[in-house]
Length: 154
Image (cartoon, rainbow, N blue to C red; front, top):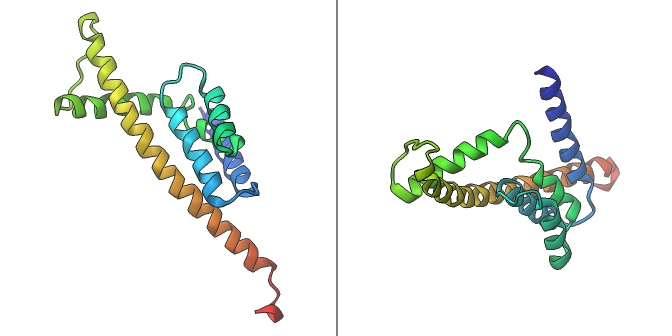
């Protein structure tokens, strides 16, 4: 378990450092990353990376930042997003928070609740990630710029 935690920590550190070093505007990097987050959470059945690259190409975004955003969905976070998506969707659809299980007769209802909830969860997390990434990059660049200034240039 410690190895998995260390691997996940290394992954997040890599993503953080990579995002800080891109030369694009903070808004462009944040938008690219947030699209990756949306696609990473939303069930794209293995074509998420291709979708990120395609969307990035069409809208002239940073595809690497987008791909990094898709890493939000990994072996540790996936169960959290699956369960959260189902319960949010169930609440949106029926107004109740209850587990109906996986009976064959209720599979359609489960899928509808999951997809509606996932659309909501994906959207919320991508919007949050946009503002978090944008503000982190802006703060980093301000700190870096201040660090380069000499006392005589103030």
